[in-house]
Amino acid sequence: MRTLERTPEQRDLGAAVRSVLARHPGAAAWSPLTGRVGAAALAVPEEYGGAGCGSVEVGVVMDALGGALSPVPYLGSAVLTVGALVAAGDARACARLLPDLAGGTATGALAWAEHGSWEPSALRTRAVRDPARGWLLTGAKEHVLPGAGAGVPEVVLVLARGGAGAGTGTGADSGDGGDSGDGGALSLFRLTGPPAAWRIRSTMDPSRPLAELALDRTPAALVGAEGDGERVLARVRDLGVTALAAEQVGAAARALAVTVGYAGERVQFGRPIGSFQAVKHRLADMYAAVENARGLALAAAAADAAPGPAAAAGSACGEAYSWVAGEMIQLHGGIGITWEHEAHRFFKRAHGAARLFGGPSAHRARLAARLTARPGPTGAR
Image 1 (cartoon, rainbow, N blue to C red):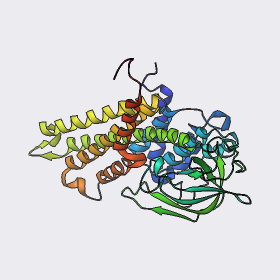
Image 2 (spheres, rainbow, N blue to C red):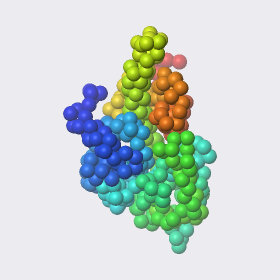
Image 3 (cartoon, rainbow, N blue to C red):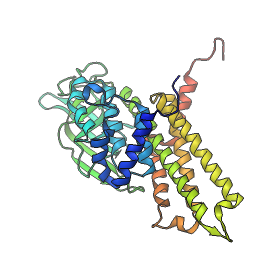
Image 4 (cartoon, helix red, strand yellow):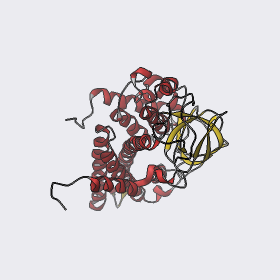
């Protein structure tokens, strides 16, 4: 049975990431994180230049990034893009793309959500096989986690519908597999030409902008088996939710620590406000929420982002962080609502992150669907 305790190596990894973030604030941390620490290579298999680690090690990095509210593109590139390539099982695409993603010389993005939804049923982007030009994609994607800059990342993966159905493609990254058709199955593609438009949109959380992607017969290459996109998406979603849960716990823990520190320094009626019983109770509730969320996040990572634990962590950690961030502002009083104080940054990250990949209610719905789909005992009604 796997333990939820971190190993000395994992603790050293977290310390290394926090050290880099302290020395290189903001986006400047990306280069040392990928070069010196090797954070982007953690989830990449060893045969493609990576460390061959899993969700536990990724969670260690995300926890540290959350505590610093770091804007580096780790979630979109090192988790979603790498996870999609590995899940697709396309050896040629992996050999071509993963080494650069692992080394940080390239960043990636997975274009997934449409029409305000992360659900596969909402995806309408079309893939058509042209005899002369290969695969062409048409549609619009939103809520894309961008790469390291404002421009189009070096690797852009897109989920689209089309082709002849599951199992008919060759899966070669060159884009020469699969037949055209009117099938509605999802497949994973890599853009091989510039999109019609790529726009970075500001969000409530300025440290996590999101991009919109427009495609108009944009050339692309099939990645993995044609029609296998829904399976790949299910795996990537669980990986993303598990990694995000670790970030949310790291940020919530930091918000709690800042609030406890303030409660010990702020004096009212001749006493630190942290000595008042009402404040103690609220801080204790915040601590309980953080630790409950931490347990679920660690369990999901230890299960390698299995669907059930991932959904449970996604539901609990998003809500816990949002509540803790709100309490942080309340317990800081007047200073907590000022632009100069960092409390608003935790609040904005909390509510922005809570909507990624579907939000807590969507995770609970997925978890409920899994539980109700399980067969009961023999003779059970």
